[in-house]
Image (cartoon, rainbow, N blue to C red):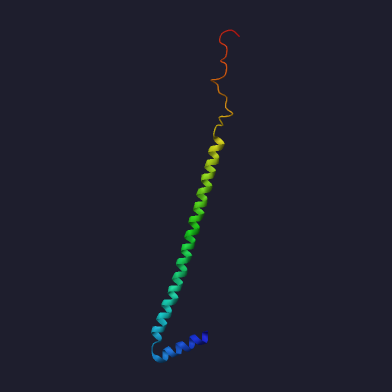
Length: 91
């Protein structure tokens, strides 16, 4: 592969278009590097958004569990209105 590239560069130099070939090669390499950087940035952004979504869901579940833990279970609370009132006066 390196031999092919070397031969192509020598041919380009012989025909006087080496500068244009190198510029095109530079543009291609830079475009590839830019594509890799953008893909990596997008991947990191997506992962961060997924982590934030999971964190929000875990916090929501924790708050819901805390509310349920602190809630009053009406099946176990005495209904004072239905009880006999205490006798007033003499015991």
